[in-house]
Image (cartoon, rainbow, N blue to C red; front, side):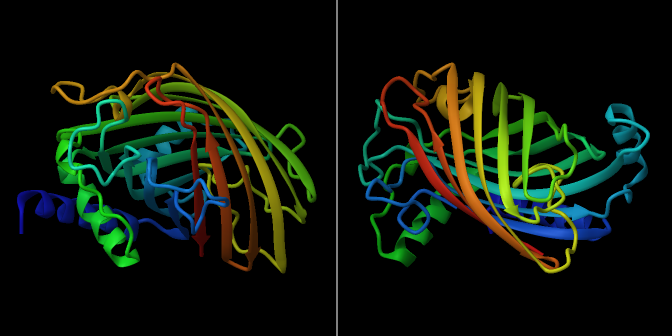
Length: 318
């Protein structure tokens, strides 16, 4: 067993023990991919953000360890708020377009993988939710991006990636995000608009953004929108179905996956300072089980290529 595999195994075991010690109200598993199975139309391909997985354990509202409770009280949204802790483990893979080329591709984004664990504390009442999310992990070969993508492509009998030797070097990664979401009208059964804003700091990503989510449905879930850091609603009666649309603008000061390694020499491209993102999706919830599909579109992210980004996501919660 290699040193990086041992380190990752210990990391996963530690996160699992933390999750097991937290009173768990829900678990959500999400899979992101930019190829045919999840992206409509003929343009699906492997490039940019190409593959991601994320599992989140959501604790019972109001049930937090002492330290997390004190943190929630410090940045909370008021005395009527309920606090919640969630723990996450995920991996993200980024590649250039021509993954079959075994030579460096200097006019496209570098290969990169990011393996992380995280914790989120949310304070929410009927009209406002504020979340502080911290993710810590590793970028580079230790994140096992080459192994995951090669295994997946062999399984699906599609072109193998041949340029991972030129990926970003190993580097510890940290990002902290403060996210706030508003429901000015409180809970609405059939239609709602939830504006949001966030600030992210760290060597992995430094940005600020704002957007809004519009949701329509047959008795909407009582939450702050699909994919909100506060997590899904608990068990519901009957079936709840919905469709949603989301738009967001972001000003980006640093993106490790485009700007390259912080302290080591690596491949990099010229990042766009402003990016727009749009999402369309649908979902359903029955009892404690929920499923959601999201199609995401992101505008041009770096100057070397005029490509946009398209990928699909499937999330299942229980």
